[in-house]
Image: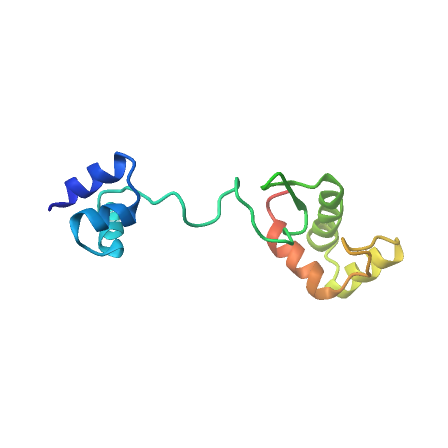
Length: 127
């Protein structure tokens, strides 16, 4: 059976495994033929509609299985970006400033250099 038949069966609503069982080939062979024709299996990978990890990135939150911006945390992200890029402060100076101002992390702890660097790397050029 040719690849077009595989695509047709898949588009009729059969799963990749069902197509494989019908034709008598492996599921991976079916998926390879679908990829060759530009048909993607929509059940794999992360999408914004299905964020399934317990800790979203800083500056975002999970709202009904979707990843959305957290305005409170974004204010702190903007402070970090400003202190690093505009005022040219070192990581330890940024940590000291945030802790001095009494700004806590999401979990209520004091800031660390690693956390600040991670936030900066994720958000620089985006906010």
